[in-house]
Length: 287
Image (cartoon, rainbow, N blue to C red; front, top):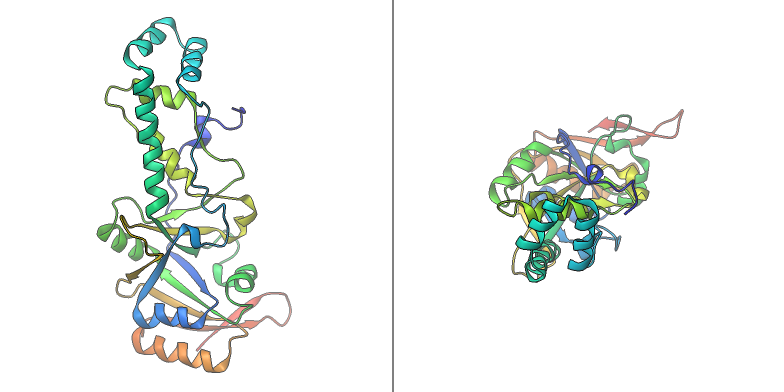
């Protein structure tokens, strides 16, 4: 493995969940489903517009037991090598490798996502012209802002134990399971796989650096034993905090959004984007 792809770089780091995230809708009817039905729609990973998103394939420094054993001999004290030979047979090695691959396979089959955009240090999502142009039908769509912690707490309680809202890692380097990691896993007293599983988690949160301007925070959900492609999940009360209308939205569709939002989300702010007069950018006027 190249020196830049170290165990340290592969470690999953926790990022504070942002207070708010925004999802852009190019289709007004989909936005109305969210606002009117008070739900968000998770989709299978195969339905996203990038075949590399997420990567969903574990990479290893090694291919088989023999390579692992050679590495042990070349890098570990003789006492450790002797213990490795006694404790880890080729069949045991392959069984543990299968457990890792099964975990990856489970992620791939049951992984659903809902993509959102979080503020960067200099650009709130609603001011991101790229997002409006690419994901909101050339500024004709809608952006819905959510209270992130309400979403995370509600979905975490109902679905999975880990945080539902996860930060995307932008890199063209794929995290991989190293010889050293595998050695620690195999030689631990209780086959502690947390470090290995963290790499799987990091892998499914890795996208190409080309997408970094989106600053994506992804809501993830898991659904076992189903062939459906979407999951509709109810929103907690007051989860929608702000609704942004694109600067080029058609008046009839603007009226539909405003009517539904005022009826069902009276607490939420509604704003419309307007082109700035003295610079390339947007400003927002409350409705």
